[in-house]
Image (cartoon, rainbow over all chains, first blue to last red; front, side):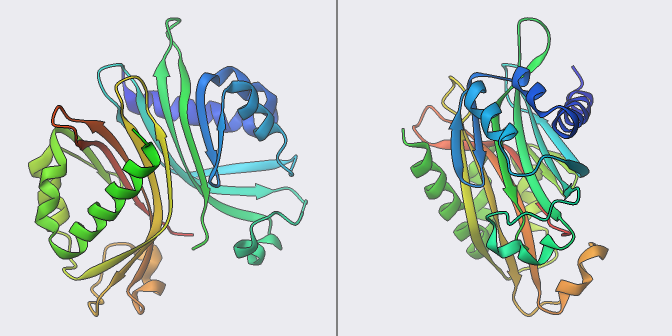
Length: 137
Length: 137
């Protein structure tokens, strides 16, 4: 396994799915999966998918700036660390992030996110850990 | 084990050590440890400690803004995701980050970092995975 290739393929697949068919992300999570979204903790594929598909914006485009990855131990996991931006398409909603009002005019947000991918018996990976933070820098 | 308590205690210890006695970080890493520092991959406690102690600035102070944590699987690991800032004390060196020249006057940098902590037989934790990125937002 080449962890860099796994990480790149995962990130491309994840954000293409997020931006075009968000409900399709459900297949990447399992019941043991955890999401921390701006400090809110969510457990399990169903709740995580509900959170992601229920976000206030419907149209968006991610632009990924950096991808770092490392293997996470003998179980064959891969940690993926992503930085990038999120462009909302013409929807300048009042998101609940008071520190980033300045960006709202452009609908542009900067983010960091980490995924911990665990191999499945079918030869693919699922997301066990997922932590998301917007930048307030 | 309360992963939130582990994460808070680790972050406090790590950054207090970083800011006051950087060489003391060596005990937190092992030969299997990995550091990705602004995209550069470094393996093993000795090389990681050399990298961290050899950074161009000597005096600094970290201010941590957010700490997220999750358990990483049956082996008892804890993933810690940190955002914060790094204030350099009166040393406005020409760091090799062209995008952040604007911050140099203040010596202030924003960062994100993740640690994957693994329990040791002695009842403590070591850092298996460590990924660091400055923000260019």
